[in-house]
Length: 260
Image (tube, rainbow, N blue to C red; front, side, top):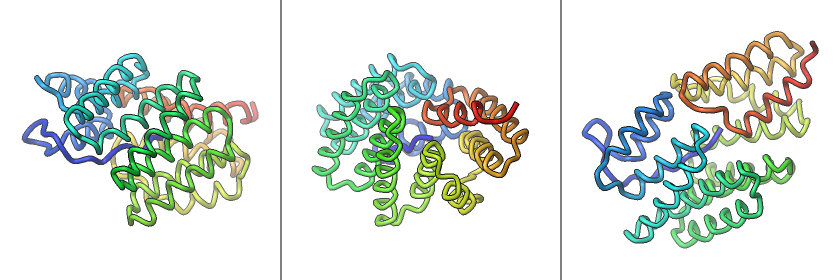
């Protein structure tokens, strides 16, 4: 489950103050098609609108469209001195390249994101860069490296007092540790997070089924685990997106180990 930016510039409509709020609302409420239409209807989209168009297309598995929008967002951000958007664009482009298996390129983009974050002295963007690093390492099956990168992001959010994003990242840490076979610690982390992640939004409810599948598996409740996997797929499809590849790794791990 991805972490996403929290920049605050650019207006879309009277109902929502910023492009970031608009993009995030459509993502979390599972209305991506409507969100894409709303953002594409802007006559002169700013870098934030282009960024979120890239994110929404990425979540639907349209990596070509996502890359085009993200590159346009990066170019527009540089032209308009929207420097806070630059590291986020690098992070999202890293994700696109990771999904394509271009790990070296993805890691180079993470370094560019870190450099841009340092120039802005933006700790949350730095945390997002560590998240992108963790994602790339996880997909390339370097679970130990992924775990350490998640821990670095968590420490930043802790330092910044951002408990919401810290908990989201702890949840990602738990799923990476699950793939690494650290079952006792996973059960502890997910148990401590129960009730802290659910926000009544379809996006988070969908991914909560993956967490329940993990806990059920660890506790030997295999039929329930299989049921939660099916619920996760259905819920994500209802949210007009595809299951994130890092979450798909968890589902595949479970499916291969649940007794038939």
